[in-house]
Image (tube, rainbow, N blue to C red; front, side, top):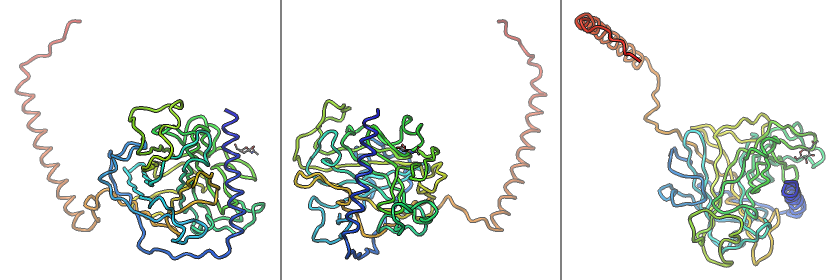
Length: 360
Ligand SMILES: *[C@@H]1O[C@H](CO)[C@@H](O)[C@H](O)[C@H]1NC(C)=O
């Protein structure tokens, strides 16, 4: 138990460090925002199962994005494997995401950086920018919930090196008992950040931990080259042969609202848009990826709509609808009076049938 946790933290720490160093290197970052990009998580209860398989998403509209390097969003350096398709839906309680990326199969058990990896990032604080993961300007030793107030972003990061395809990872009783956003089993972690060098697991901070935090995410992954649809176990690793052409699938869900009291989780509201982005890491040419060497679906926040179930179900309360309601209530009371009168009459007539106790 100790070692995977240590590895998780070490990985987290090294991602943080990588972000710092490259963040300082990139001086000429510029962004051409795509005003068109926007995705919608329609109300579709009971359609998808959180298992990494994508067939149940077939009838859900997908949104396609070019994957550009996060630190230099230049189309010349786009991910060569193809675009990322993002699908989302909600069921009134949970929100679901599917990320689909073409890519030759690569997998090295126990080595996250030699496997593909994905992350979702959401705006929490109103001043949190997409660029620089919240954009708080404070240095690592002074960034905290007071100095960076308003710059909070919520991050879910899934590194699959220890995650068996089709199995569920993320929030689990063991890590949630510790009260932080970790996942010692599959490294599907729940993080928050104010900037690339001020990023931590939910509940963890340099000024002290708050054990009221939880990992609220769940997720699974799959690759189209896998031949079995029954359960894999660890011994089946690497599950497919290296270099097989196909598609990676990453599926996630989270409750629309969480019990976060620390301003570390995004809270979704039906009928209101959120702002998000998705990132992808891939070990290109067999080289392990590094923290800042990721692609993202855009160089600014992408709006995410969470529409209500049915607009027909929402009635505007007006004078006339109140009158109609009152009229209906009156009609109902007249009818029920009639019914009770009839029942009384009927009982009176039938009272010839006497009560017969049952012998036990
Ligand atoms: C906070 O939590 C982290 C991760 O669980 C741990 O490594 C660290 O020692 C904790 N800090 C304190 C002050 O308890």
